Length: 247
Image 1 (cartoon, rainbow, N blue to C red):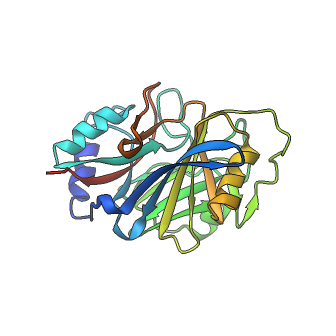
Image 2 (image 1 turned 180 degrees about the horizontal axis):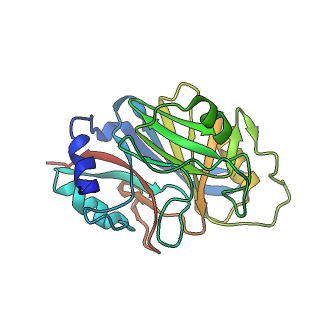
């Protein structure tokens, strides 16, 4: 079965409105960020991993070509979680309702294992960032889901391990959601920032109660309205807003 073709066909009936998206360059606390907000009430937001031959897509261009065959295109996209060297997701990964990688609740090395980490869960007209152990307890139904870490904001509080005077700085990207799940906000720093600075962006500037770190250093953004189509190494999971082609 060709996974990507099946995914595209299954989602054709979903709304695909460019009006669901707004992107801007924003400043907070002396740093510049690219911010893209998604209105989940009218959004076709999905996760992507492999092509029709079950090989990792890796870049935005192959995904756009696959969508264009269906009369669709990307309005926005971003790398969507950590991955192994073969581009397999490190933690939970759900695509079109099918779990392709299991939830990992245990601590471990690296940023992913810096608990608490979390899950970005997409369902019809909703998107939520949920802390991993809470997700494991409630097991919400997700049409798409990706696990990453650490959490940036947890119920209005910064991750307890973040240090205001940290010297660890990277280009970073992440996602936060509103308490009602009707808005998802993606952010990517334009300069290297600390976890503490990045978490404060979501909590103090964007006013979001929960936010999740997606990755750093390899962070990539596709946002035509900002003139962004970032090149770089092959990615693992990709989150993308699918819209109808113009004309």
